Length: 328
Image 1 (cartoon, one colour):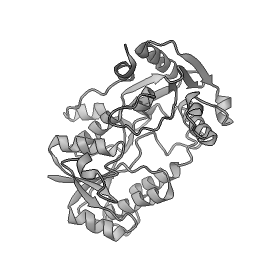
Image 2 (cartoon, rainbow, N blue to C red):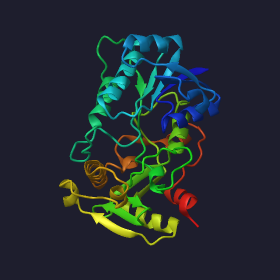
Image 3 (cartoon, rainbow, N blue to C red):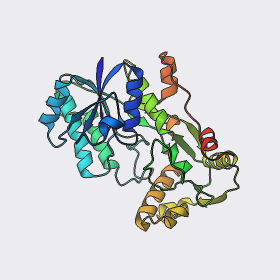
Image 4 (cartoon, rainbow, N blue to C red):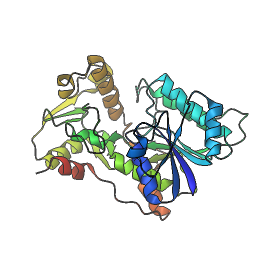
């Protein structure tokens, strides 16, 4: 069987990817970890290998020893240390003779968009991985096949304050929909597109695309894509609630003054964190960054898999999801 290694394989998306890979029965699945804590119990059927992310030679030996063919990174890339860990893993993948494919950790939107459309302060970490994958140093003797995966907003956040059983530690941070305060907080004039997908469907599609002989550079996994206004209407219909609507103007977003949903302030998040995340995400929505399925060059996962004869289940849409969580 083809050996697949999942970096961050006990995290929010990683553990679901591991589960889906094991369910196919087609792969020998490895979890790359800094330690064995709780891994074997959480991911039965997968093998754990201990990583020293600071050493490219050690990582290279590990990949070659276990004959790893494909690496799926689901590391949370939010600081220099974690970014370096992923970069070192990419270097090791280029160096190991067994590795041929690499999926970097993204699972959001296109981080190569200009700051005017995506004023996200951490995107340099993702761009560093992209640069290394697309233009490796000349001393490497091979290229890696790779794909960037876009999913938009993770749908599970819209069910808060209810947390899904598969993500019991989901951070209680509200964007767009705040069912704790019975509120919608939407950017601009309501015409921009919001794309969202469940983590379980993301994992299902990632496992499915491993069966393809080649990958597109950019791949969108989509549960729902709705204008902001239609998003609000779906939320009201699915939950049976009359929600309070609030629109954050483009001018307010550009000044960094949008406050977003009320509950973020009530649950104790820091003002800088709230305004930073809300204004960056809402401005990205208003500028079209979350209309991922209609971006030039992006292939829709469902259409690609169907074209190649790969059967995947239908992704759960937002209305169905909210009905399951909040419908009467």
